[in-house]
Every structure is written in structure tokens, then in C-alpha cells.
Amino acid sequence: MQFHTIASEEDEQLWQKIIAMEEQPFTTARGLEFSYQVKRNRNGERLGEIIFDRKEKTVTRNTILLAYKKAIEVQTAEGCVSGPKKLGVFGASYLYPIFLHMGICSKEPQPKTE
Image 1 (tube, rainbow, N blue to C red):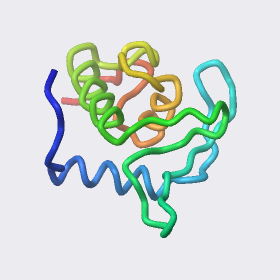
Image 2: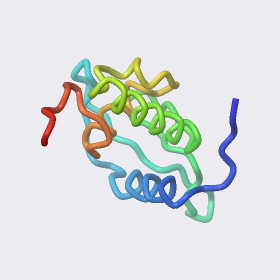
Image 3: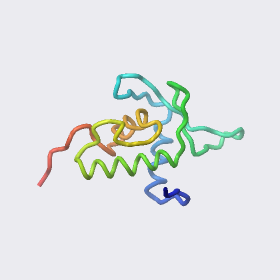
């Protein structure tokens, strides 16, 4: 397993988008509403983790980055990411609608443009 230790510019841009969408309402593939917050320390500084309000589950920044890379991989190979299980990470049911909203992946194959 490869560990992510140094944030690339692309990773940092993704994280900034995640931060920008904090508290925004989303809906899972099963129709359950949720939002998330970026976890903060006692001084109010953001940590590398988000907390989903629905079940108070947390997902680390590294997990989000792994899911992002998997979404890109599947989107490229299959033309879509048909559901959260394709991401293969903990919290995928919550990350999937966020990625759909961000345009990282789509539920159905996109028409090819020439």
C-alpha cells in the first residue's frame, strides 16, 4: 500500500474544494440526506479529516485522496462510476455524491464528443 505524505497541487485543490463545500447538503445514492464538517482542533485549525453528520463517521484526507484517484481511474476506464462501491474505501457512500457534485465522475457514461 502506498501512503500519501506530500500533497500535490491537485490533491491540495481537491482538499480546498472539500473545505469550500463544508455544511452543504448532499444526498446518498439511497436518498439519505447528509452534510459534513472539516474537523478542527481546539484552536480552530482545520485537521485532515471530515465528519459526516448522518452517523458521525469520520474520513481522513488520505482516504478522500484514495477515493478520488479511484474515481478518476474508474471514470477513465469505464466512462462512469456507477455507484459508491466502485470507490472501494470507507465512507464511499458519502464521498460518491460529493464527487458527483464536483464533476469528478458521473453516474452514467457521458456521450463522446468529437
